[in-house]
Image 1: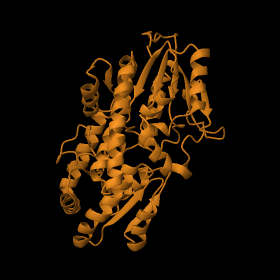
Image 2: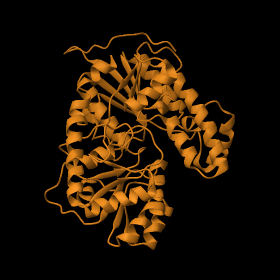
Image 3: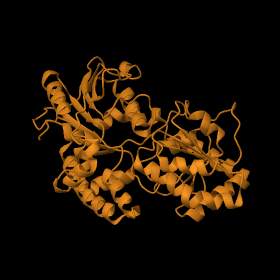
Image 4: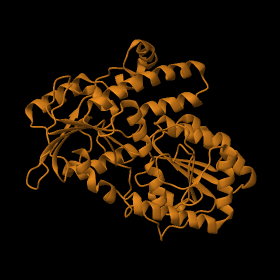
Length: 410
């Protein structure tokens, strides 16, 4: 694929035509992926007419994003890999050059829709919202710029999963998928005109793989510091811990199980008043069983507004062992004036400083000790809260981050 280097029509009165490809309607913004996507759509709509194309059915709620898009095309996702045959499909996938997680996202319907849109409309820019979207690009010349927006480095997630997985067969399978994903990523990072990543760490990974600095830009994750702000009307519940995340994403599930198995018992031995709240979609039965055995563990599940729960909690925990990119949940908690305790992987890519605006711990013992310290030392906890909110307001406000998005895409 060779893309012509057409410049965007960004002058006032001259609007670019943008084809924005993503996996789903990014509304309601219930997870980090949707929040970042929605923020990009808001900003891009200021200087371009957006045609959004994603998987979905006609009854999907669109009202949250219609004001940012000139047109919304919903595509039926045929079952390329049926859930009922997932194991066998994964096994057969060993003989494919394409990573299984990518192959699952392939859709002839989506490819045909994109082909039709690029043929019939004067598209200036195709924005692929993650590496999984490029698999559906037609092989023909698009005669426009292609930008890939990476939320994570997916091969890094697979690698970290492999390192913590104990099942030898899953470990081997993950190693094979990791190699395939690295090859697939490298191929597409080189093909696109621009690659947008969320942190300098991710930028260095991409640069090392493709040896092209000019096409890689960093647009950090951000937060709406007015929407997420300290609450004066909601009282904090002492000794309460909270974790927020979409549990259908395996790294979140692993983080909660790791916390419940290896960290929480250490805390309970020394502070019986502690409680732990788990918020997010897709909470597994294994996690639910913890709450059935211990009533201090509260499985809350999905909520439309996480702010009241964060406001009531005393400490926000991020015990992630698998992941890439950066965590919006940390920025939201900091914006609400809550002290955050995280692993190094959990806060990776953020300009945080251990002991000043966040607490970073990479062993279960250290993690438990840090929580107990914040419980006891209120003045120290307050300093961490204030420093965290200051950091977010100065460096991670969406308003500041996205102001130069247009110039970085050209």
